[in-house]
Image (cartoon, each protein chain N blue to C red):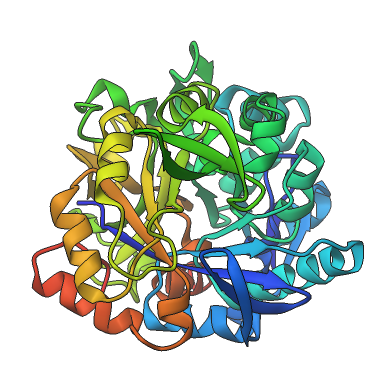
Length: 205
Length: 252
């Protein structure tokens, strides 16, 4: 069973439906016991980093994630959920993240000419794999397209980098450290390619 | 490199897909959920569901259809039509919509854009503009293109993006339904000032019109159309293969 963490951030309807589509039981929950007893955990998220991080820390959900990661349970952060895995973010100030992934979250606008590369990056972009092979991409090919919507990106995370995408520079597309994974793109909105990434995640561990 | 998007639009009334020609003369086309699945399988990059229902029963039916579509297709869904309040955003986002497009609702209440952007993020708010040439400038029209607001479309779009609209859909009333190609002049004027993605709408009649659009205006991010896809005049897979052949970066 997969637990999709509900901490009051974003709409989880499509995410739950996408797990049903790959034949995996998924529950949307904020119940700590259910989350800790799940086979794997999804950390979703849209919106502002600081709000989401505050909700995770204040609700005690951050501790649940630390405990799960310590047991080696697979965790997948999606979009803002991936960014929350980092040590800190510079989205409107400086905010502490969960710290699973070494690195920080920074504005795309710092790196590109915004008259050419619009912010947010919205749309389908191609995956380019790094040297680090991952079971997450067991069913995915280099160059497959996935759907991105974001204005900030994961920076200085070379050690954890699984895949990038080109948007004026090599933008972090996926990361991994131990049993913790993150995708900047939305697998639940990336058609068959995305469903296959979720299917592969369900087979980890 | 990010790809150019092809977006079919499904106008939905009383649970069925319809399409008007110049906003008049609506005729029935197909079931929204099966059409959405068909488009997604043929390579559509995104879908727009446009609710043109007037009644409360029709609105409830629309949200049911939206939920069913979100259970069936796993590409981004944008919902428009009848979005007047932040509660309307909430209603469709809960059913699986990813983005919400505002048009007349934002004209009546321009604060709607900033209120929704603050709550759901800029990426969630799409400003859809119906514009038409009036006395040498582009005017914003409300109520499905029936009412001239007198507002300048370029100024309105600038204001919309300042307030937090994350994407712009520009529908030219002058070219809509005519099938003679997109309104490159009007789109060019919008691209000059656009800081967020621009989606071109109105006037696509064949594959060449999309090639022409992306070649003439590299700053246009996506092309939206309805009837040419519904009536099978253009298949999305043929369109995308041809765009790729012409050197335009698309997801195939």
